[in-house]
Image (cartoon, rainbow, N blue to C red; front, side, top):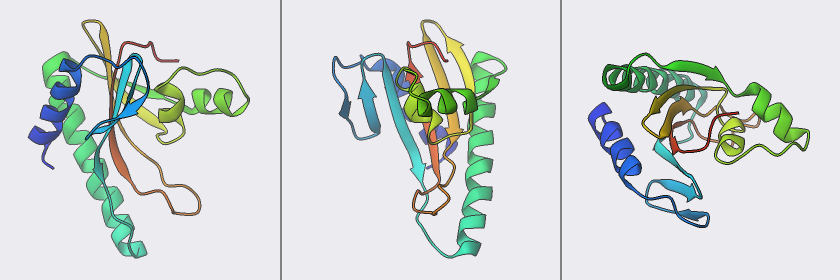
Length: 144
């Protein structure tokens, strides 16, 4: 996908109402107050391909963040580490932030009207079973 396609996907998510119950759509998961989408997912492969995927996805994330900053102003870069630790300790961290904190270390974040828009990259699990993903969130739920 191109940056223009990623922007179109985020615009589509912004235009959709939030469902009353958690469910799936063609872009990812949605639930009360949020949409969480995998804009792009890397295929698994040999180590060299994984390293190339990291570089490619980082570049795509930066390009998308730049385009969104052009629309809505400078992004906040927030760490999700504390949300991940609190969730792992049993504290209730609201969706989508709990799920996002288990896959992304940090996100670019904008406040647009009544919604938060976040984009970031998933990090691979230590066992390399999780693919790299470019993630986007549209939510009315305040970040942790």
